[in-house]
Length: 161
Image (cartoon, rainbow, N blue to C red; front, top):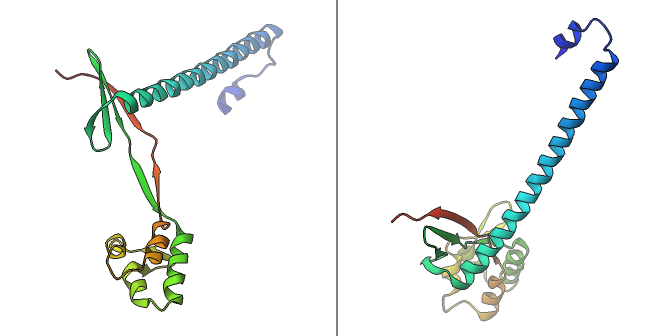
């Protein structure tokens, strides 16, 4: 671009300014229209996805543990309804504090591993269910894991006959 501006040795004519201004205005309007069209298409896609989720939830046949399928004549819609589990650090700390205060250091060692912060061991869920774990500790443990629904993944495709 620097070379192009160096090549212009004379000021533009009024007609050239008009031509450039008209081109700029048209391109700006085109970009604005495309941006609006993209937003409208995105809104339509969100609405279509919500309808797919609603129909899959109500009428879809179970395909796998977390998937449902709707059959059309030539197309089908499959939805995968996943979940994620995370650990609530504050609840973990409350459980660890309770166990430490009550002198339950053996349970602390069985449930947790020490890193920069307290995290649940991969075996903690199995350990908490053992008979020697008090009900109060189980209740505190229940708050440590937080399960959230993920946004469903939707796929529309031609049927393979």
